[in-house]
Length: 530
Image (cartoon, rainbow, N blue to C red):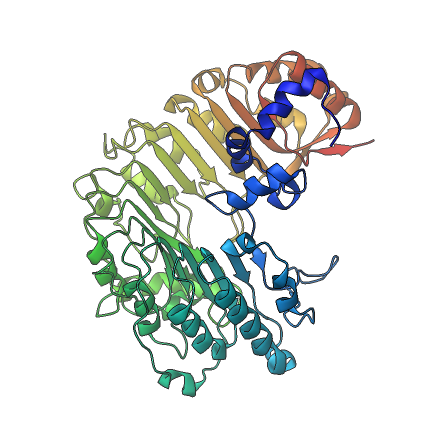
């Protein structure tokens, strides 16, 4: 490495200081794979960080230009054991096996052999070093090997993620595999179990893992039968994944393995609860409108009942039409959730306009909620009255997306105007907007001085580009200048979806730098040359 110039000497000394460099490297977005190549000191720091920044992947990345980004070469011939001979053992702190998810018949002879060989070798050779283990698999026959690893290896696991991409048929022989208690793992605090109980598996597999991890604080689960969490008193963060395309086949929430019972077991301890949509069904089918609309008729059948949760601080429900909280959200009122501060709500089948209008006149209904996240608001009037039920609202996020259902295209201006009277500090909008002109986008900020004066952060993302037409609009550049100056009082502004022409972009870059305007148009800001 070359000797640093005098003006860079202080920076060079700081980056050679392990304590200072560790703090920098822990927070930089630059890949750790690149950072460790800078010098020996940085390499040592990266490998010694408490939270691993590097992951040892036991699969070959897809070739550049591959049609399928999920395609991996699970049958790569390079001897993995040979690589491990000269590998720094600390690289085994975090391990990921993606498995083979291609056509089953084509890869049946080699897929399991390759995955089993690599997993068994690294789990045994680096057993006490492994802290993070993430395994994605499709072949059910890999399950016994997985449990053998958990039975005999990796006693110091801190994080375990298991993803089973289910096949459409079951192997009856696996249902008779003998299951034994797993050794206790006191360091395991993060656990994600996704689909390993179905179709031929049983809740006992997930239960054995949970029984061995009494100190788990973060638990994410996906499956039709829910485990017993009565022994897991440390869980604070709970995420439950729901197959959105299979909602009509969700069993009742009641019973021994029902969702109601599981939530009741943790109701007094969790601080974060997320009922999350999955976009892929257990059969691998994409989400379809037929399954969505049928789901509304099934909401009563499943009998979901959310318990009182005295310590819950954040509640996210992406499937309100299935897992109801009352027509006026009465199941999550302060009497039932007195410490609720962050609320995320969405429906699969409808926008939230009707629900919000039902609570619009209820004064101080959610007086502790400071952050509100909403999906699909077509009528800006539904936003205008939010201050009444949410008197202390500071942060509002509205996502107007067309990923799950066809939504109406909306304009930025009415949404901004609706937020003026809310006194927000943070506003995030992602809109399924029509193709519009940059002059119209700027015009949307008209009469929003009160909104901008209270805001600290603003983020706007447009699904369609706003095209630069300022060269053909009277006083177009003057309008742009005044709009940019209006952002000067904010701490942070992020705008994505604007397509500048080359001359305008050069002027904008210079202007925001000279006036110290905290606005970011994103790394992928589109430049259009006429």
